[in-house]
Length: 331
Image 1 (cartoon, one colour):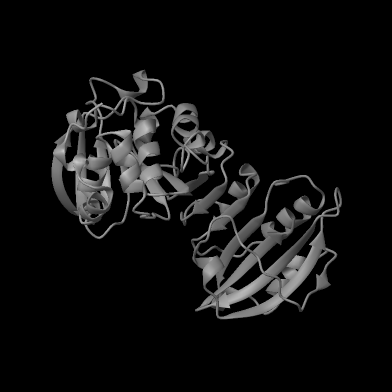
Image 2 (cartoon, one colour):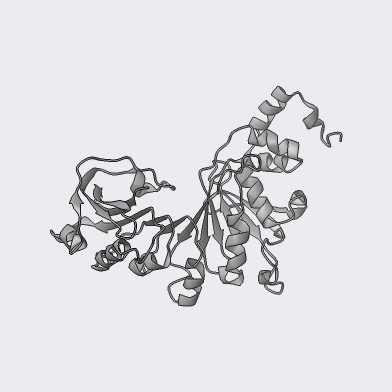
């Protein structure tokens, strides 16, 4: 079939140079013209580390480019409830492009995206052309209108980074305070999904309780926590093989000034452990600040799970004014 645009008749080298000078919105528009144009944008090798999908009354995908901070997707009004649709959702009625935080840009109608029949395919398209392997979902107020079974399974579980090589998309759940503070059932409906990583920013949620609800590979509790003997109870349960059998890494952080002098003894009380001096390199499946930045290592201890003799290291390190507790389960 003949190209619809004269631009596509340019020689490959020239077209690649032209595409490189497009703004981010223009790159997205151009990539939606055809499979060939999508591959040309993909070959520019522009890489986005993580898509953060904030789910509320709108769905906003944060891209964090200099010229395009986010794409907000506006769905039908209240008299046409979105939850009448199965996931994958139909495309929104409009898109709002935001060039910077708090600064609204123009709104485009969906006729520009007619060859994308569903929201899932649109997000999959973005992840392909921008080589994104990490997708984080942040549920906000307004997200109660969606069916979570469809939301997690339809949007995240089957997204691929590259349809030709089928690279795996890392599925991350990012939790803030809202809308979980006063809605226990809603929180439970979110936590039951077995994703890959949890990033917990909420300060008002009981992080120790959530630990037992999320049997996933990586748990990053990023908000500073109050120290509690519940952490000792959690480690004991893990050693007995009674909780979090799929866990590969856990991090929690505490204000150093609020810890007693014997906080390590409190955490390790009654737990058989061995002091470790030799450092081993560990690569979490999802890099977050506690895994990338540290000032010094305070202490390390090895423990073993009784059911399969799986070795894990408890590591205490210091960064700024915080002490981080890390549990690393070795393969």
